[in-house]
Image (tube, rainbow, N blue to C red):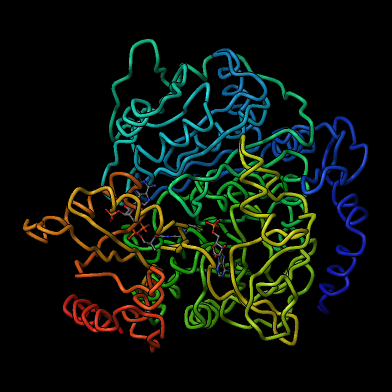
Length: 631
Ligand code: COA
Ligand code: AMP
């Protein structure tokens, strides 16, 4: 079909209130908004002020009322526990209403925070929706984070309750979540009143008398009705890496979020009610929030909750099995998942074993998508592969290729068109628009469309300082790139210390803070270096204090352990080298970019301002000794 993208995009920017007002008609409101957009307190904009709704009602109750009660809402597919379970909309509503009742009985009221620290089990989704049902604000913390990261989030969100599970399962390894939670609560100044624990058969956790309750006890009472909330009330907080060790609590509202996500299902993903949509991510990430839980359920689709990996599960064709067995129309995952599959099955032999006839489109996001992977997937799957670009902050795609509006030609390599609602610009250091093809800082003109962050939790000041102050009138994405002559946006790199490892967003600054706290370390730097599967992994450069004579391998082992224990295994911090000095400019700026280029085997130029060029040769030799560059 001819694409309607240009016309819709233009209309969305010229008439944002009419555009989003129309989209809001698809949502059930207890009281319609007084207006579409409140611009009276810039740079704080509010969508749908005066509107009253309930997100849980919109994603569950209304589908049951409209006759979808017997349709599967959620399919739990867990190869790691050999379990599959189908929950219809009626089943899910019943469980969520029971959970909401249990939470209310434990004193949770509208506006209270509930931290959810869970593996990929249905109870995680039930808990999220139960919070939404009673107007409580959930904050899901990804299970791969270690206790100190969880403690920081508990301290900031100050939850009344924490909901967790006895364990997670990483392919065959059992991860004892409950002991990580206990340690986090010990470390945190804010203490939740209660913890609710899902006891998994693989590992039962001991409960703290008086504080901890079993999940099953929570589900024993009645069913709670939906609590009406303002469109502008917070639905959730999701913490994401900032440029320091302190995570930022992204706040999402109820009304704008639901309107935007609902709109995106048909228009960006091209999905109709009743179809099966699979986001192979984790509920702990924004992709999981938006596209495992809220968007597909809002659209009346069937969503899949998959507890496993793209590879390393008992079945190397795991992804294709899930698509075939559950008749998935659209899959959304990170390029890293496909790089891992490509490495195990380069000829696509396992793809051919399954009936993928219902499969229509593959969407990739979360990190830079290399053209090889995109083209490999496109050729072997025989479906369009769409890269789309977004962030925890935005909640849905800033750039993509809107399948529902008619696809435009695909240009492989993290290249997208701005999505309706986003006025994307590329600016230079002075704040002027650059010419097509010139790299600059990617920003979005305010107001951001609905669904984007409205502030940082309890921290309006950092919200403004981090995102809005640098280019007044614009939201700073933190990504650099350019717009080409055909209006495609190319995402090239970050402008800060963030790296993307297996689709996970990590701050190298946070890792440096940890390494610097080791008693033998004088100085350190961490850069992301290329990795065949994970895209990028962190690599540490360590300078020891004078007089340290301990075994170097032992020190490196301790440093690796420290990052794992403080951030978590997902940091994938596994390599560090000890160097005599760090390369710096005469003004003291560490040349992290140059070290990265040496490790990646890319050409680099020696800056005229470097204080000691010889150190670069020494670093190259040290890296060569441990196998870098890899290519
Ligand atoms: N709980 C506890 N530990 C976890 C975890 C969780 N929820 N998730 C990951 N980890 C651990 C892993 O076990 C691994 O530990 P290890 O160092 O002891 O081996 C470490 O964190 C790194 O995990 P990961 O980066 O996922 O590497 P992997 O080798 O286990 O798997 C892929 C690599 C590519 C197969 C896997 O990342 C994948 O399937 N990704 C899909 C894409 C995705 O989910 N992206 C998220 C954003 S959309
Ligand atoms: P997160 O908040 O974890 O979703 O990470 C957001 C960051 O991931 C973005 O700011 C980008 O740096 C990167 N990212 C996400 N999607 C893409 C993409 N399609 N291409 C390139 N980078 C991406």
